[in-house]
Length: 87
Image (cartoon, rainbow, N blue to C red; front, side, top):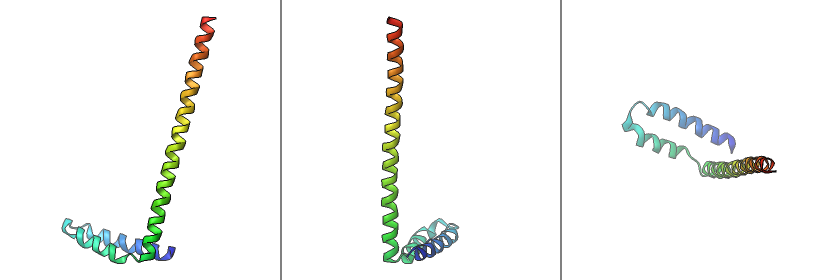
C-alpha cells in the first residue's frame, strides 16, 4: 500500500510541475490528482492526516505544559526573592 501511495504522489508531483505552467490548468491538475488516488491511498492519506493532527495536538499540550512550568518557576523565584527581601 505504501508503494502505491509513493507512485501516486510521484505522479501527482509530475502533474503538478506540468500544470503549474498555466493557471487555467489548475482544475485539470486537481482532476488528474483525484483520478490517481485509489481508495486505499485515501485511507492511508486520511490516517496520516489524523496522526499528524494528533501529533500537533500533543505538541501543543507539551508546549503548554512547559510554558506553565516555566511560568510557575518564574513566579516561585519572584516570590522567594520577595520573601527574602521582606525578612
